[in-house]
Image 1: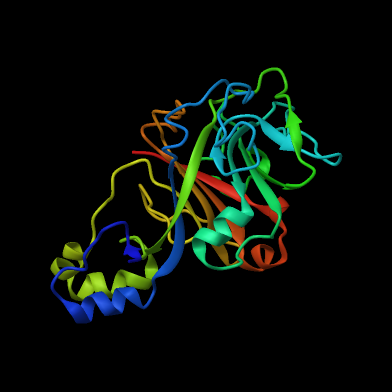
Image 2 (image 1 turned 90 degrees about the vertical axis):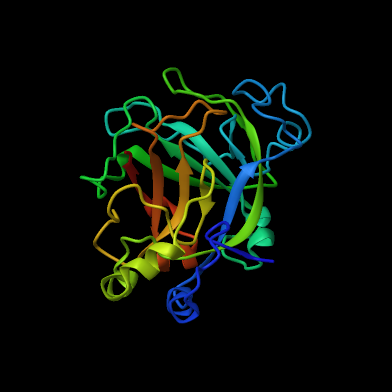
Length: 262
């Protein structure tokens, strides 16, 4: 059975729940794969098992970056090398989602400035701290991280389709909160962290923070995670945003990002 908001049961008000569910979006929840155990080796992937070593092309957190002949390691405007945060296997995500949402046969590598941690919500328009690189999975080869780039242990991920509902602070549900605050409060809860997601509605820590110059949708949400050693501020999250038309066109070079924390 497809879960909604990772286990929220909808409370007792069926009409109110139906009104919220009218805005539900499918998402892929990423969890640490049992096949991997926990952190399965050094950042270069050399000690990984079948889940994410020989199969470096799978969906995972951290580990070694994969590139092709066109790959150039992403850097900030000042030349600091970004860090590989997540790799998505598009075919795995599409299979879990049940939709062809991402380009078939491709890998998406998500980079962030994990050294200085730029890109907080007061400046979501600045793209230098964030980069998403698309690589053909069939020709991808390991690429060593440049000097100065923070690296993280590789952790294989399993994807599971869930339905997500808008965060309490989203404009589409604000009228419902204004009319029935007690009833709405009963609908919402939080699943156990870390909350890594592909697509769907984000779980904001503060008010919604999106770039404001287009129709932006969530591409990836990355939580703080003890296994990888990630602590984004005070138990914060990274949010990678993409314009809807760019997602359809496979134009991932235009992604922007925001960090939020408690």
